[in-house]
Amino acid sequence: MRILYLVSTFPYPPTDGLKLRPFNIIKRFPTGHAIGLVCLGELKPEATATSLGAEQVFGLPDVMRRNSLLNITRRYPFPVYSIDPKKVRTHLSKIIDHFKPDIINCESLLLSYALCQWKLAVPVVNSFPDCNSLYRRQMVERAESLQGMLVERIKWLKMINYERDYYKCFNHIIVVADRDKNEILRLCGSIPITVIPNGVDCRFFDGNSVAPQTATIAFVGVMNYPPNVDAVLYFADNVLPLVRKHVPEVRFIVAGKDPSESVINLGRLPGVEVTGYVEDIREIYRRASMVVVPIRFGTGVKNKVLEAMAMAMPVIATTEAVGGIPVVNGESIIIADEPGAMAEEVISLLKNRDRARSIGYAARERVEGLFSWESVGRKLLSVYEDVLGAPKVRGIE
Figure 1 (tube, rainbow, N blue to C red):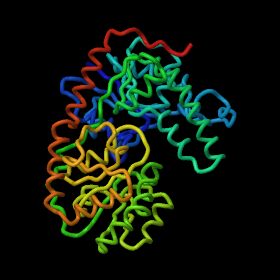
Figure 2: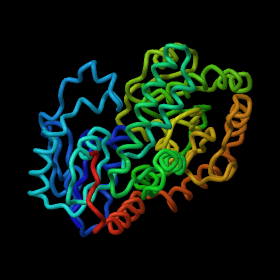
Figure 3: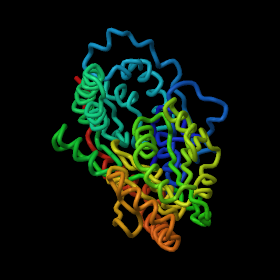
């Protein structure tokens, strides 16, 4: 099978969630199939097929356009109007003629908008992993001012319009969690949709780390992403002081690129370290006794949870953070939604190393069995095989 895989950004190095999924899917896809990768913009010298395991890599140069403020009044989210569908069609038609794909996989919000402007003879699967309108609704609910709520509500309603219209254009939809699937079905009615969770590279996150004897807690993530910012501020303000009453020497490491100003300011607190970008995130896991994931809103599957579990780290997380991950509280992970309960669990693990190790080992075993990228590739291939021969993409009339 020949697969044309469309993304917004060249997925190497895989430093965030948007790059991590296509990078590992292409790298670990079942053998005997050819994948051509298509990215927005000019290709940089490091954007090579060999760095991913793809057969070819293509760029879409000069397809972006200046977005007029008048587009704020239009039906769909403002960012989608920054792409020129006609130019995308010109470039992509040549790529399709050259590569001759059996199927197209689109994992880009902008390119999905462009694709639906014309009818294609090749079936198209949309695999943008999350339901964006679900996230935008959460942002409305969390707005701190009337003005902020109104702005977020407009964004939410425009995303609903977009998803209702555009998801129906594709032969199949793929998301990473049941909650995203259920919301899309609620919006769009009966459309073909499959849940294929994210995976984790269990060879890279090898689980052989030895937990240090120091009382160190870690949080890992892209640190300008609102759910992550909220999580570390919440933990530092509401949980860490409770832990410190019983474990005065406790340290809290916040690791990840692009920390916001509010996250940087956490580094001024005693015992809190904000690292910024880390070349090898495994070093953070090896410094930590446990990982906390106090996420309170968001969509999809949290890669940070899977990676920590693969490293055999004991993880304490909220119910929101483990959405889409089949775990049993108290066995391979600990779930705590209130500050007091989370603090108690942190203190317990810091003082009971045997329990912490037991949960970590169970976590590693859990992700090895369910979340390899090879299994993700096999599930995706099964969807492709079912889709082949389906009707053409309908397109927006």
